Image (cartoon, one colour):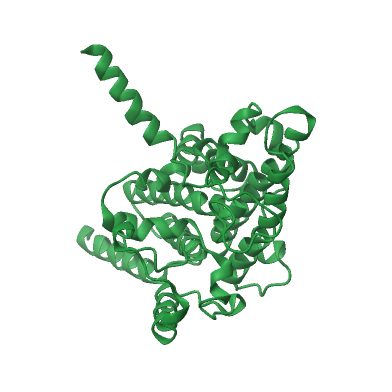
Length: 349
């Protein structure tokens, strides 16, 4: 009986820590992205985020959105699943949406998808209801929105933390605000990490689909190979070996000078589009055996995977830094704290 319990416990633990083959970077990859981002932060970043316990919590939370995907609850699968990807090619055809004019508003975009389907039903194959229990097959993914929305939450949380600290928040309020920041930083890191995996920006996410004149792999297993299977073959990637590739965090508007200073959503789109350009080179590398893990050629994929993880860590660090730097005083909270302080003073007279 004890052996059965231990076996069951081990199975549950493995599901909690290791996403299935349909996910982006395995847990260790996502964890590494968050850890790399932490190494990019300046020494004057809020000190509560620099202690080992906070850093470990942020690293652990990198896997949280994938843990949500292990559920059988269709409501959670519906809202969470599409946040991990965006099939960029489908925006142009069949939807007829210009990627460079995408709205930062998730529900406006969702309405665009529905209108396109209603206007040109002939362009869209029928959806098998038996395979669409979570009602996500009619979507192309919401990855850019998952990133910008979490960035906005983080910016808000830095705002009210600063306001609690400057205008009389209680120690409990300050501590709770700090915990909220840790949580959002960790979870947000997952989606930025997804954005650095090229197969999360394409319809070719589980093998090449449609016309295939170059004979690229059509096997769904290519996704799990890139997510972590290949890295396990070649012995993993250690933080100590790659953290030197990450530069000090800076404002995202400086990282992407082509974009307007306030257009964070546009910068996030640009980041994902840059990874989409690597989809075909990735398939070319796979075809050439560079992800086989065997011989000199089979080890060449490690540099590519490492580079993508570093890109994710760098972008994440830049977004965390930008949210902190740009967070304004929460004026409503300041007003409420001022009223509370005055009321307390009056009561003390």
